[in-house]
Image (cartoon, rainbow, N blue to C red; front, side):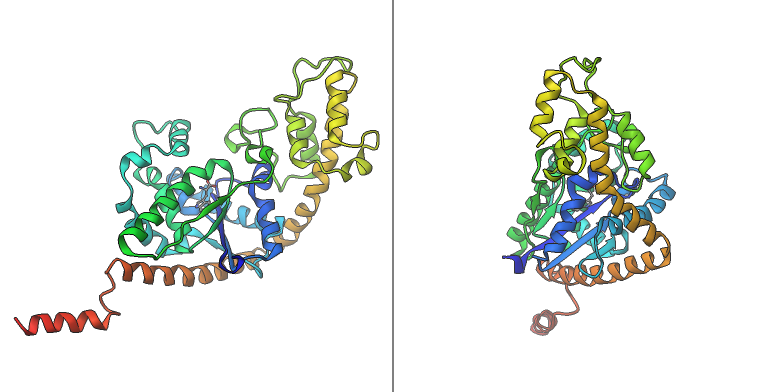
Length: 364
Ligand code: TRP
């Protein structure tokens, strides 16, 4: 099984990566990489997809390609073990997207809930760029060109992977078994699927300004933790506190491990004890925030240190990406050869076709 496992996932370079990306997917990717239980693993920077809703802001995408690459390396992704590449540098992906367009209907795309939400968020209702509208098709091409079996991603990507699966199935049905139907690999811990922003608002997102970034300094992280949204009814220490919608506790659910208590808060044995005390009253927000800050600092410090190292040699990071693009292109080109053959558009590498046609016209 693992022999056939091909893992692929990517991010849009529209900003630096934050701890929502980290618990939602990045951390798991590093674990998967280090377990080594796969045939191939690809992680890519989806710059062409980022341009679908940033077409007038190419500089933003360009700047964030290197930021995301640094975040990857800092988080522990290792180009000696996996292939890291940039989407736009693989022209085969455009070609495959073009063929895939024929396998999807407009109404099917209109039903994609993630795209629906995004159209609303961007105010695109009456003027949706075609490229943006069809990005799920191009995402299916990203996945299928590498014959990915396993796509680690957050819950919001579920409709995309479903669409990719449908497209692969339809392709195979029409043209014969060529592509692989992918599966999504969701975070194991439910809270990690959708980490809220520090203001308690739905999701951590750059546009809401409620993120803690991976590359942030220790001081910035601490300031943000101390300003986090908790329970507006928990005014005095002795008041009973509420856990629902309390961002500090949501983050603890995502980040806290049993051994953090001995290290940072020996008054308690586990998170349930803290929650119980908080709900009873008598436990102040400050103490909980300090604990969370210690945990986040422990998690983020090695990432920050590694990032600083990689930042010292930026040309080497671009070299790494270039090599990754070359490796990725070879794989995608191989798939596209198979796709063209299946679709009967391989005119020049098919000796049988040419002699068959020659015969047909000779007997006319
Ligand atoms: N849509 C993903 C995001 O917004 C990025 C992405 C593009 C992707 N192509 C992909 C993720 C293929 C997984 C597989 O983050």
